[in-house]
Amino acid sequence: MNKVWIISAIIILSVLKTSNLYADENIILSDSWGMSFGFRGRGALRSAGKSFSLRNSPDQSSENQAASAAAYSIDSLSVKFSLELRDWVSLKTRVDYYWNSSFIYNLYPKDYEQNKFHLRDFYLSFPSNTKMSSFWIGRRTFEFENIYLFQLDNPFNQIELQGFGYENEVFQASIALNNESLFTTGRDINGNQVLDSDNNPQLFQEHDLIITAFFSGKFLLSEGKIFQPVFALRYYQELTKQENDSNNVKLDTVVNSSSFMVGGIFSRPLADGLKGHTTVWFQSLPTDKNVRPYNNAVSSSYMGKGRVPPNYPQNTIGILDSSEFYFTPYAGVLSGIILLNNTYASELPVLKIADDKKSLEHDGTQTSRLANRLSVDIQPVYFITRNWQLGLDLSLVYVSRKLIASDANSVVITPILKYSFDKKLRTNQYFFFSCSFGYYDWKIKAYPDGTKTQNLFTTQSGINFLL
Image (tube, rainbow, N blue to C red; front, side, top):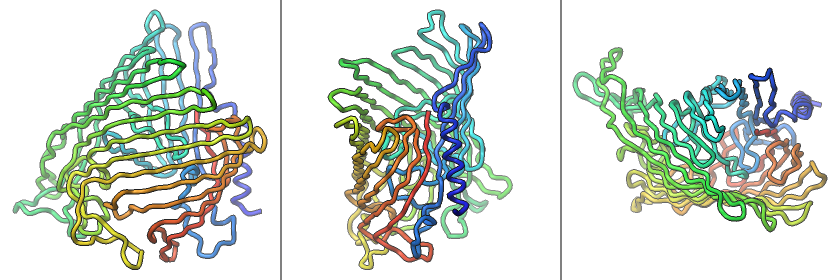
């Protein structure tokens, strides 16, 4: 038995022994004091290429095509802790640790470096006399239900708001003030654009003051259905001085701007064998019309003065749905749907597949700002036992027109075997083994030796346990 499988067995046994920590553990210290703690995480058990004698197998440390097997590599661990002085105040904390760098696209882009601790929550909560409401102050993250099969965070998630807020059983309102980073271009003493080694405008990091107003509600409808309206508004103010003394460069001004997101989440409890939730939203981000996405086949590009990251649209209309269908006590179906209407800040060349199918190229005529994107994932699941589940994941990705060099249409089929600790169809406490066969409409995938392919076979295994 190789080292990978030995390590896998140790991890599995460790998780089996600690499975009671999937929910918060509450400890009463005295009549006045109490505490609670919990954790969550996901990660890989092995490198799949070592499990089969595959020639020229892809490097799976950076490659995973299975939508329902997002834990193909070590992702993160999260630990939370709270200390409560009953009827007066509680301190709530949460720390995340990432093995791989993570990038979150919300109303501002936020980068989480790997192998570092990140403080997600550190705030005080003061309950009212009736215990029906509370006031908080500090650093806080708000999260909503994810899109299960895609392992995709809800777009309404608010990451590390630093401010204060009020909440009760019906709504919450928060005001935050964050200091984030952005990039701008610059000019030398002669007024010439400063270029980097690739002859593109060089970027200089600055500080951005971001003021956020965030509101969400929770309204009970008929038959246990719940609607959560959500609204977030942000205002951006450049903070850094306009001179870069070390390089004798005058930085270009970044204009003040704003962004907003509005929509809601409709949750459906189990009824007639069906449950799930649907998220609908509209988002508008600040941008610079001169910014081109990375890897567009026509021109080199850079982030520029806009606050929107490369390859990201200015406006998005989106619909996300995550559902569960129960047919018998031993079988069900999981589904996920993502429908996006993306509008970019400027006209981009429409790309077509090159004759050798190894890249995308511009036909020289068409341009567009719009692209529609559809992702559909269906996974029938059979319960072999109460814990062991066998699924067949079918994933389809379609884009109406290719504007980014990484755009591709694909079909991926993934048999997947799960061991579920919580014995649920929509399990968040499991380890899995799977293999995937993907077909793409051009040779977007590459083997370690550089050979490009339209067809890719990969295997995955991992563990996932979320609070």
